[in-house]
Length: 538
Image 1 (cartoon, rainbow, N blue to C red):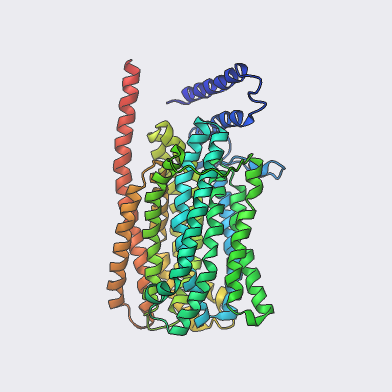
Image 2 (tube, rainbow, N blue to C red):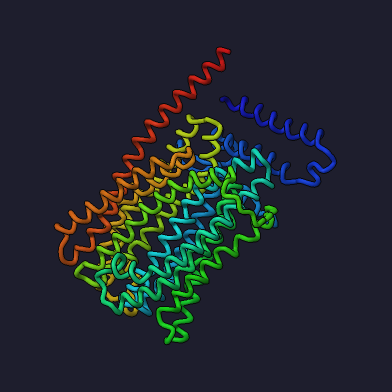
């Protein structure tokens, strides 16, 4: 479809809106403004699609890797929280949020390391966070966002804002019940899970402390899970400011918990543990004003046979399995780390992953989150040729930043860790171990970036099965590589086994996703061309 044809399509949509307003009853747009907003949003969304392809307006990038980007959209104003952003603009917002969050995270980690170092209490804290994080990701993390965003967009467009809000209320209520049940089950099974699966190699006192901390942190998934619904709704409307801000403020609660411990040393490791709950609450509260401005209408509705809920669940099921399979690698890593000869290995691995996760968040997660609404819109319109072009731009642009970052992390790992972390109880030995682990993780950065972007593209195509199968492949390869690398990495270098296994399995999964995506899009584009030829012949 040419640019002129798309402009004509937009004019037709606008004319349809005007006609519907003229023929409405007296309780039309004045009494139900949500319907008008929904229709206008469709036109604005198509404008953004055209701007990305046709090069309208200011752009940023190099060569073919150029995206629509205007600094005007970042001007402060009363309406900024309701402003719609292009992919590059939304990615920039999210990147700034991730940078702020990681900057605060480094401050938080430095305070934590100075207070607890790589002690048994620190190991128990890190291990205790695994189960709550795992449950949150399984029930209401990225899986819920990937399922709710495409369904909410379609309901808002096809059925109006009121029906869309009813769907949001229904999903919220179902998630609330599910998370409460998971919380109760987690509290009951925590001792057995910690002793037999999470840290079987630790002593009984450390296992007992880990169980106690786990039971406190299990409240976190309940709070964050409900907040995920708000994030998905705002992201669906391309309103990324408040979701980005919620990312940035998360560490304030954790830092507050650590400061409480420093002020009252008797609180010990429970200070940052309860800080986790405060951080989750901050992340949710920040997004409430955005929902209010959107005209949120919550209703206590319960209808498990609802068509919209069924669509969400059909997408959520495979996504939840994907998260389950992917998240097991962290539990597997924790279990293997508990058997490593150096007892500081788990803490060193955690600190290395903290640094490594920053470029992953900036170059994979932020871009993928910003692009998901547009990828979904292209799929809904059947524009698979444009989809292929956008995916190539996203992956290429991300890799142009990712590969140099990988090299920088490998070269600068030791001085970086020395400056940031080597204070108090975090000694030179801890720095050496963390540096080795960071190098191992950094080598897999390009593969992780490509895999994340391609997985989001499959979700936009409402295909959760392909990422599911590649995740199964990833975990199998991950375990196999750990077992193999532990036979050749001995002594101090034993800590390299887990990061290098992560690198190898992530890279292999990315290559597999590339192959499947190439074959899938080639078939889709061929079908699209046949439909166009058939339409032209008629």
